[in-house]
Amino acid sequence: MIQIHDKQFVPFITASEIDAVITKMARQAEEDLKGEIPVFIGVLNGSFMVVSDYVKKYTQPCEVSFVKLASYEGMATTSTVKQLIGLNQSLEGRTVVVIEDIVDTGNTVAELKKIFEGHNLKALKIATLFFKPDAYKQDIKLDYIGFEIPDKFIVGYGLDYDGQGRNLPQVYQLKE
Ligand code: IMP
Ligand code: MG
Image (cartoon, rainbow, N blue to C red):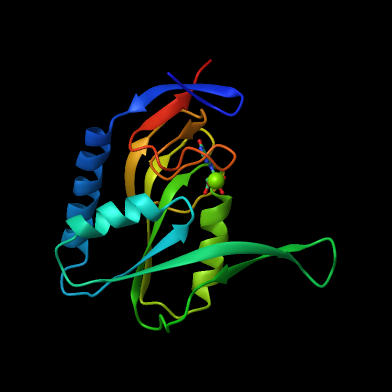
């Protein structure tokens, strides 16, 4: 058991289980993306570890980039608009694979999809290491899913609890 801030967490998924699942995800993408040079785009901060391990297992030509979703207040003060920061290349005609650490409600994925739709991609695919099906509120298809997990808070392997825990090589779940 570990403690982060005021909460206790118990071991949930080991580093070797994560490794095996990421290998499987990379193999699936290799099969699907034969003959393409996909652009893998990690969504910071949480995805830094999964992207690093994933692309090492992807043996075909590819590009790797990172973005961050920032919210700012729209002109009408009531609306919050999401903006992508860090994208500094044209993605026109490209196959983009967004790599997420976790998809929970799906709000982030929906924002990303909306933003990338404006970039004239050839195709947009979504990969996520963790998926909470019971929390998901979108119809957007997720192309590559590592683990389907219960709707409970987890930390480690890039995921944080209030800023901490990202460095843990395995994943822990909030203790009941
Ligand atoms: P969304 O609800 O799918 O938009 O997910 C929003 C964000 O919440 C994710 O990108 C994570 O940063 C964070 N998040 C969701 N569930 C967890 C969790 O169990 N642990 C840590 N962060 C989480
Ligand atoms: Mg977070």
